[in-house]
Length: 250
Ligand code: GLN
Image (cartoon, rainbow, N blue to C red; front, side):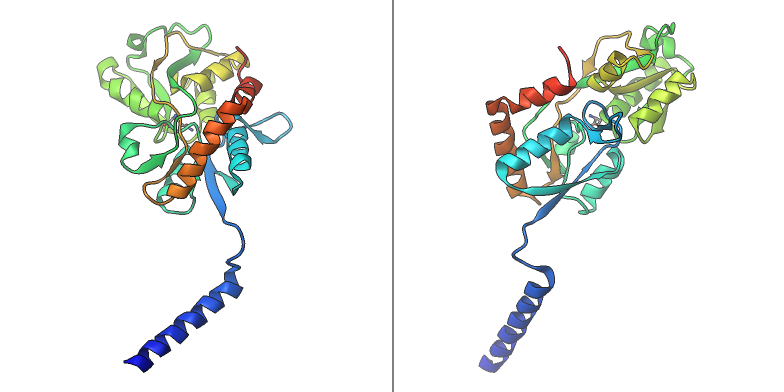
């Protein structure tokens, strides 16, 4: 019995030492964080071809404050959520709404931005209400809160929802006249409209959930703690407002 335990101990020690030289245990953990591709002003490619946005600046500020390292993966919203569920990434920061349904699967950071849903139409279009969508096609993003909202009223108003991977493609579809409207997050539509993309929002904002950074439920409590502490500090220091003001003018 004793000998067997000794052998087990030795094997364990050997494995432990093998791991130590193979994977460099002393190296710092680098968290993998997935995000969307075109979701301005939260993440998007600027005119210089660099990925910028509120989410990216905020995560950077939080990580600096808390002293953790991370690397970003720009994969798109539904792909980011899929990667999180597959355990391929530690977190998602992608203007992701904290919904009750999602809270069952993910641990979110504290909310960092209040949002809602908007309906975007071609500027000058005669679509002014949901009734005007009768018999038409509307665009929405796979897995997004805007898509769930569009689907929740589609039967009532008699329109069809077509799903897209990213916001830029949805906006193009409306600009091209294929979709009569797009349902997406209000601040994202607002940003594009201010930029002069040629869309407008004829209706007030529909209620939506605030954004949070998602981790897989119970998988990363230490990361959630750092995110919340960092977020609080970044808000306290004024850095949060500075980031928001960089992208959204009042
Ligand atoms: N806020 C929306 C959601 O979480 C959309 C996020 C996104 O498209 N990046 O469903």
